[in-house]
Length: 506
Image (cartoon, rainbow, N blue to C red; front, top):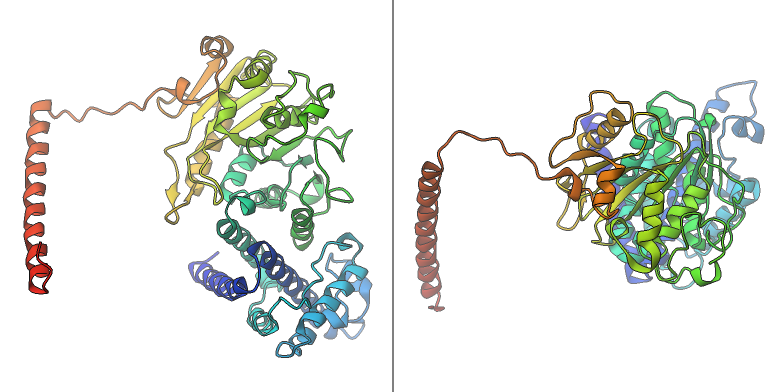
């Protein structure tokens, strides 16, 4: 994307968010999220339909109202009452809410995969119709489903931007479904889901699948070579995931309904080639007391007060025994906890050599929580280069702040982590780097009491000697410090003079 296009996108995103923000006065953020994302979806499918519609109008042998013309190219069929120009006619009327509800209902009827998914509650009294109409008008001037917009992935950027902003606005509740893109991309670059079955047992809004599809596209693969499976407990988030996959034309099996992965596994027989997940951290009310005899707990019964090791073992249970690889995000406590059998489970996993790599991530990556996190890469079958070894990467010093609260990994940071992992796995010019990465054998991990915190293994970064004698360095530093003290005293005097002049003497 060019600099001008990127600048244009940023302007669109900001305008859309400002418009959406107007709704905050009339409803809770968890509600207006669905109002706005539903409109984004409606505008996208209408734009895509209209682009094809105009093409068919120019073809004297084509019928622009033939549903098959659209379905054959994976374009949603949009009935007349749901087309954006029709909706726009009512933007400044009290009926705008009912018009949008009717549009959503008609799209669901014509597209079976969306049945029961779209928000059809725009006519409710508490939703301010004037503001809703303003939002419709603003959306009109932004094309997100045209061919050019698709090339720029405008829809994807707007959608991800809104998910991240909602996560930031909502706090911890919003963060349950949104995983920062840089974390998802790091996992995807490490496990490389080219071809096969991709599974996310706690898929949230579907970000792992979206990033996987981008990876495939960037590497000139085919999305048709990948089968997507997912599950989500939260009903509204499950709907978001269905919408997110639909607008990107990803054919995914997210089950016929939302369900708890531990207590109603919708993919019981699945053995996935790739697993990508960001389970909720440290959840204590997961119902483990009712699952103590579960066949998934091969490495030990997880504690009822923390689901971290239940998630890890659930993923291993669903991982293909041959070339399957899993990548997941967890709280750092999972690396060293000894509570209620967790230490024994971790020891058993290490002894059976299913842990490939551990990455300590920078803090402040999440909008919703400051809990530091790590990445676990797991395999049931390793190659001869990595057998009985674990790669530790300490990436805590990577990343940069994008606002006062949140940090982000750059593309270079992500590639540094991924390339280190692949070089190690393929035995291609890999070297331990003090302070960053270390390939440790099973004996070294055992010597560290099976604790997997990367800092224990990578050591500290070696600082190059600059050749300046210590005494000379101290003279320079002392001189600089003295100069700074003197400047500080001068500033204090100037401040006192200014305050005295306006009657606020110190």
